[in-house]
Image 1 (cartoon, helix red, strand yellow):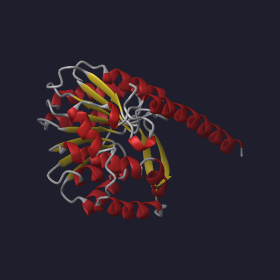
Image 2 (cartoon, rainbow, N blue to C red):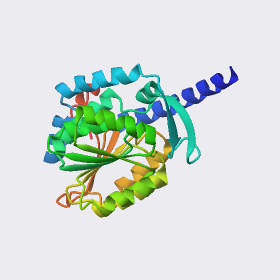
Image 3 (tube, rainbow, N blue to C red):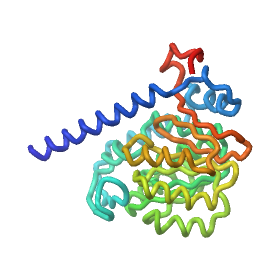
Length: 286
């Protein structure tokens, strides 16, 4: 009973901190009416203002419904925040689907981001059950992805999911990022879209970014998930925004996007929100 109470207290504390971070984001966020950059304006219209439903959303919903009733236990090795390095435990698949997989709202937003950018290839750190990988490649018909997952049993589940919904387009590699990423880089010339969603700590996030810059190109985009998940991730986001290679950053709360765009001569940072969430924000005040 005491253990349950401690868990509840931790959850309440996390919820309070997370809500406060959202309120600070909400206060800063601008809408489509505040933005005059042609590229960013087009981005807004095709992502946070796009309300269309695509068929893959329903296909993934069916996949998630199947995962949410799967109570098989899998071994979990946490290489990121939240435990000592390499601690092993077991978790039901449905718990992973509910707690660790990308949410439907974030998944749809990620789909629209990729659909707007149309990258040719992807590198993802943190496959989990493969849901976010499917959202990405389905938004880009000709794109292919390498996704890295630290947990062997979870990686095997992800392979089955991506093979069912995106056959031949997503290669899932298994092992700690620090070991697998250099091997991937050794055989990869250039990556257009990076998705970081597997290690929510400050130092590893910075280090992976610096490593991946070596296989980036001028059009590359870095998508950092859960930039408000913790104080460490907020700190990492603030650091990466100021990186000399980054010319444009877009804060969407669920994701932080970093653009290298050398043609973007003046460095800019945007915090954006859908206009219907700030109906009074008509662009008169900046």
